[in-house]
Every structure is written in C-alpha cells, then in structure tokens.
Length: 244
Image (cartoon, rainbow, N blue to C red; front, side, top):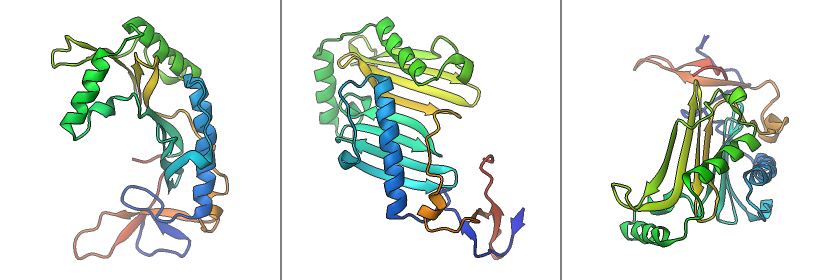
C-alpha cells in the first residue's frame, strides 16, 4: 500500500530499518534483557565463572519494529549481539580470530606467533564436540533448524598460507534453507569463542511496553520511504515485518 501523506501516529524508519528515536528508559529495559539473556547463553556455552551485571556492561542497542539490534560488551571481553529481537552472535575478545585480523600487521603477527607456540588442548574431534554441545544446549538441534548432523564446513586454522603450521583454533559451520550457524572454538581456552546465528531462532524477551518506553503512542504504525523518482513527491509504504 503506497501512502502519499503521513498521519501523526506514523513513524518513518531509517534506511536500515531502525526506529529513529531512543530513550534512557528503552536503553535500560533492553540492557536488562540483554544482560539476563547473556547470562543464560554464557551458562549454556560453558563460560564457567562468568557473571554479568548491567554495571559491567557497555551497550550499543538500537530499537527496531520487531525488537532491537546491537551489542553489549561485558567486562571489556564478552560481546553478545542481537538483531530483530533475536540473539545472533557472541564473541570472546580474548580468544576470537579478530585478534589477528586487525589493521595492524605487527599486532596480527604477534598474536599468530603467540598462538602458534601455545599448547593446543583440543583435536578436530574434541573441538567439534564442544561446538555441537553448544548448539544442542541452545536448542539448535537438526530437527528444529534443518541443519545437517555433520558440519557443512570444518577447519583448523593455520599460521601460514598453506596452513602447514596449525593454530589452536577451529571453525565449524552449518547451513540450511534460510538459516546458518558458525561456531569457533579455541584450543587454548577449550571454549566457544565466536558464534554467529541467523534464522528464526533464539528469540529474546523483548519489553512488551517498548512503544511506551520509546515515548510512542500505542497505535504507532511504522512506514518506510518508498522509491520515488526525482522531482516526484515522496511516498511511503507500511512496514511489513515479514517482508524483505
């Protein structure tokens, strides 16, 4: 449905599909949601001893029509991400591969040399078991996700281009129609250090009063700018949460 005029209860989304308003109340509520869910995910992923509080968090959360997106970092180490009100990622900044994928060549080389010399506590088999256990613990089982039992991709990273000198770092990926999951496991920490999930899973408990928290009326309708030819009046279309 194409609209030429906006009503007072309509809110135009940004080009990235975000709600162009935010409030301290919404930030506080979504931070609490992320903190609670981060602790749940941490326990499921086996991050022993990790206890997260809002005081130790650095949030970057943006409201969306069906929830929120963004990330929260705890203790300057553990990062949990959300998109469209769903959990979609986790990272351990101490052991993830981004430590040797920076713009600083010297830094990258230093991390690679350190890890290449470190004791690897895992094999491909034991690393895969950790990855599969993490998926099972979060309910990402083949019957629900459509993922194959065996990973679509599995690899051990190498220090050199030919990967002859192995790093204590493993990546596993699963794919199905409309969904995917990647899990990285460190042979140094023997834990999941990176997880990326896409698909209709792992929904967060979004605040039910989020429109009120954002200072928006309960009858708010979200709209997007519709493609308009140069020189023509701007038109809009109602946002469809099931659309592209």
